[in-house]
Length: 350
Image 1 (tube, rainbow, N blue to C red):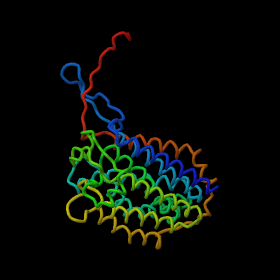
Image 2 (tube, rainbow, N blue to C red):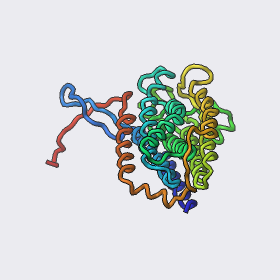
Image 3 (tube, helix red, strand yellow):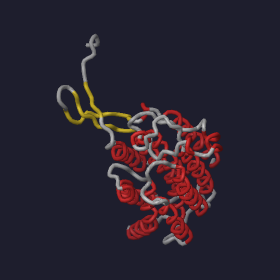
């Protein structure tokens, strides 16, 4: 049953990644909707753009959280404590995605997943401790630190792996031009290179790289992260919580450090960016968290059959749907692009 679950997950994520790599770099997959906001002179309207970037970020985040809920239910971790913990961490990490980008890059209208992850890692053990104290005061079952850390580590690496496809849509987090790489790298990645043409893609308006073949760093990251997340999920279902968490943490942060050497977008000042420093800083902290947990509670060997029962929990499913809408409106509303709309009657269709 566990193997079937991992195989089905692999098939699902592979389909998402293949479709994302094929279609999202295209110009037609940057804006998913435009809403008229203010009337302009004449018959035109100023529009608000909602992006595929926001839709992919929202979908990948909620899909990864659903994956974590399935794993936690499989290990019989209490649902109430988990939902409270998720709500607390998201309340800090969502604003941190914009705040950390402004502090590091000095740009107002941008987001950073790396900065948000760093803030989340800092607060996770203390958040678990606080939630457990609240559950103890309410005389309810507490949550196990290692099981929760492992599930959240898997959720993070899967969510960022799928979320990197959003960068293909907006043209951000773009790789270096192949023309600036070694001949071996050019030969290896020539058929996989990403090309952006639309003037509203970040690689075009910021990097002036229209029509250039770029290292497909977004797609490579998606493959590295989702593969690692699935392997970690296999470890989790065998009860190897420390292995699942540490593999997710080490691969994600070491790859983040290395992958920035393959990118051409602005990542802050200095030879080694602040995001790279953050990725290295959380490694010893993460090892300490899982080896010396601040709190623990008994868990059973995970059973994926039991885990899938979370799909019938109205509280969890409705919460995820509401979160998906919130994330779409937060990350999807474009502040760096604009549009003008006009409406008219189609002759002969009246």
